Length: 135
Image (cartoon, rainbow, N blue to C red; front, side, top):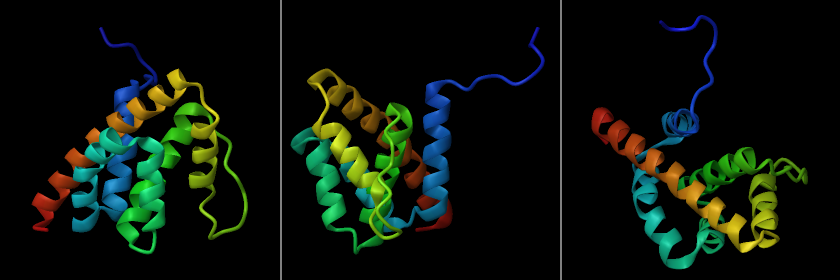
């Protein structure tokens, strides 16, 4: 018999919900294509290098959006405090990079695994939204 009241969503449900919010708010074709390539970039180059690459290309909105989506999720999961340096400074990127730079190897690996799990959802949703939207 189901219990009454609110249930606590699983971590996988939280990831899926977050990914869905991001994809539906800015998941265009370029974002979907970048999301497809992102896991290979992380595996081949590392999480910090991939985030730095995305951030360096931030003038292209899909790079900035995916970088911010990953950083904000990692901030939530690892309770990283944002850096408030101004509206256009992208404090989530700076705070996440500082956290990763100062992490023990096991924590860095956990953050990488978490980013990969999030990207799995983003990829699936972005692909589905593109198919439905005809993009």
